[in-house]
Length: 304
Image 1 (cartoon, helix red, strand yellow):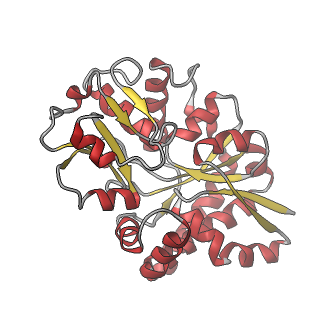
Image 2: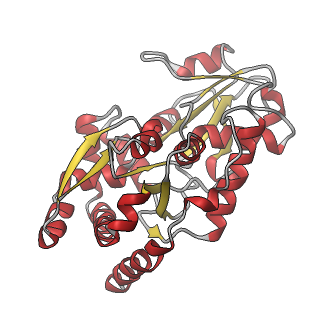
């Protein structure tokens, strides 16, 4: 049988796994193969729900959206927190000194990604509304967001990965919030419930392979940066800086993460980003807990 995995450049663990041959070798004894399907990260929940893919990885927002759309998905594993993965940038000499000052302004972010969770929570924490108090817009190709900030054209810009590394070299910009100041920003791996429950051994094998790909990235930072820069925007140096900021560690899904996701879902409902309340805990599968915990514990033990 074949497992279909959605892969995109914003998930470094899956991006590398799709290029290293680790999972192909691990699945062979099980009589399984893998198909890598390029996807848009914000659509992973939908693609799981329609059966287009079996497994995917994103930030915190897409699984919430997928669950709100009625797709039967389950959380499989999460990365350790990524406090330096992204930041909300503002003009150093501009009027925005705190999140309150974003009111009435335009904020550039990747809508539907973890960045929506980040911005909505930062605003909610100071009594502002993502829906009513800012204008969120997606970045357009070719736009120089740093220049737009300095010119006062936009109030804020959420940058991540290599673009954040590049932005740090720009003059006239300031970090208003690191992502870790607001949310844990874990990388999230989730699956179709039917696939996860019927083929839990395959899911555990995918998780073990992800852990091995993460270990490879730690041991081969320059090669990992080269693989990213070869196909994705950003220089090798910027990718090296961005990848070095990641924890490269997988964990079983903790209760604290489910609680954080529920808080995000409640904020999204209040702001109209999703159209109905959800219970995040419903997107769990008891059958997965033991096999996933077992393979991650074995990987940690082997690394000591």
